[in-house]
Image (cartoon, rainbow, N blue to C red; front, side):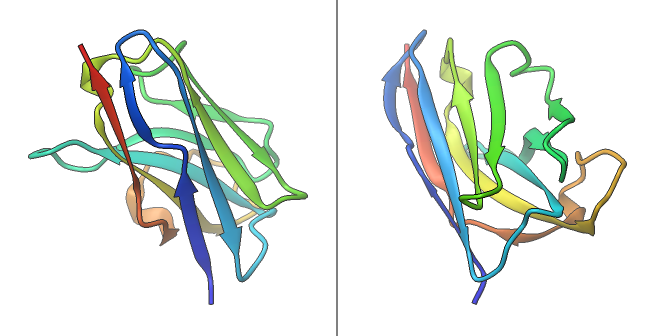
Length: 127
């Protein structure tokens, strides 16, 4: 059974930092891109960041560029999201996801291309 489990969410003041982690089990995702998405109350789920299957190409939403950093550890089958300079508008449930396209060399923005999703972790940024 494939599972993605996020951790690291919580309550933080504006300007603070959090590090989210996503642990995959049931199969290896070494050959697949991984992404982070978020959904704020009353809003649609949106793309946050993604990392290519090789780990060599990173993608960020404009709203988080320069503040968030995505990384992966293939040996541990994990992907992380370091979030710095957090703002109240970053408040959302954050989801980890695995792309369905093996060795894909294109972009990773589209939610429809992700097959596996975690249950989400809440991030709340107070002002």
